[in-house]
Structures are given as C-alpha cells and as structure tokens.
Image (cartoon, rainbow, N blue to C red; front, top):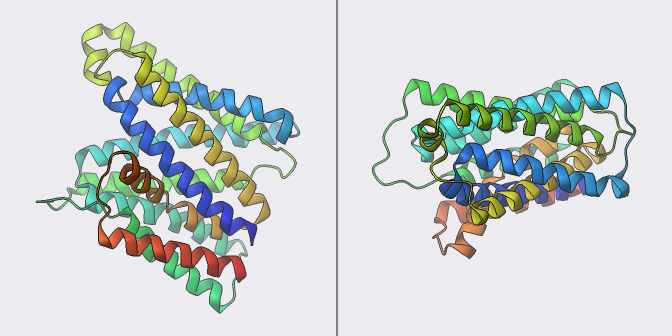
Length: 288
C-alpha cells in the first residue's frame, strides 16, 4: 500500500522539519521561527502548484484554512507543554494521542483491516511510544497542567489530520495553500504585536534578533514541514486516515535520526527498538 510508505516518509520529513525548527528557535525564538517557516512553506507550495495542481473551491479553501488554525493551536500547545516538561513523558504522550484521535475517527468512519493490519497498527502505536521517548536524567512526574496540555496538543494534531482528510479529492495542493496563508497571517500578527509592545517583551519571547543564519534554518524547516504536509495529503487520498495517522505519529524518528547525524547525539536503545518496530509496522500495513 503506497499510503503506508508515504505515511512513514511523511513522519521522517516532519521530524526533520522539527529538528531544524528547534535549531532555528535557539537563534531567533520559536515564534519567529514558526512565522518564517510559514512563509517559506507557502513559497514552496506555490512553486509546486503548477506540478500538483488542484481545483479551487469553497470546500478546499475552507477546510484548508481551518487546518491552518488547528495546526497553529497544536504547535502552540506542543511548545508550551514541552517547555514545562518532562519531555520523556510528555513527548510520547503527545505522539500517541495524535495517533489515537484520528485512528478512532477513521475506524468509526469505516476503515477496516485484516488481522495483520490490526497487528501492524498495534505495533505502530508501541513504536510511537518508544521512538518518542526522550531519556532525561532526574525527570520528575509531570504536573496535571502539563499532562492536559500534552493531551490537548496531541488531540489538535490529530484533528489537523482529520480536517486535511475532509478536503476534496480534486483540490490538489489548494488546501495547503490556504493552510499556510492562515498560519503565516496568525504568526506574523503575533510577531508584529510583540514588536509593538516593545523591544523588551519581543526579546523575552524571541531570544535574539532575526539574524540571517537563524532565518535561513527556519526557512528550510518550513519548507520541509510544507513538504511533509503535501506527502501526508497525498497519502490520505491514496489510503486511509487510520493508517496515515498512526505512521505520521512517528515523526520523532526524523528528529532523533537527524540529531544523531548532525549533532552526534546518542540514540537511546529503546528508540532504536521503536524505529525497528516502526519499519516493521509500515511493511505489514503495506501488504495488509
């Protein structure tokens, strides 16, 4: 099933985008990183339109715009809960919820699998937990507030996939153009508000000025994020929501692999087990 391959590929590209976003955020702040990424992602999608195409309609624009709003809320909640920590618990919790919400929706909506398919979904959920596990020394029990935010972030990521799945089959890349336009408008409005409120508050949020290197990394991350969205949208149209949602939830895989290659960070044994299970689950889904 091509959708299974696209789901795993989308997860890796998403995770790679998160890695670049994290690097950029250290230089120009998370809000500015997201704002710059929204613009570069929109540019990439505009360039892809002549190749991918798509019918412009109220449904395509409406669902696309809604996905942009949902995605903005999801990212804000994700950053907020991970900032509270501990990541070792909140990261896999967010990923699992992001898989369970659309998976449940898909199954209730009629997605059906054979025995092998259901086994693969179970393996994929286990892989999501293991891949998303972030070893932390001295990690403490998360607060109730952090847990609620992690669940909410995962739920909103899941809703994002559900909304994308509602877009018309002939709309091509049009919904994603609406998505990025809304996302960019919201993020740049927030950046502008911070600037108007004063340099002191802007520095407190952004950390540093909008330097060229940080902006370049943020732009690359935004382009990868938009590419992941496109891959996932194609996968949703070729396959089913349940399969895509579970595999996309493996997005931490891209982050840890790129961190291991670029930053020479150590991949925990439990994460390697998760990666192996992820590949196995994708292979089973592909043949089920």
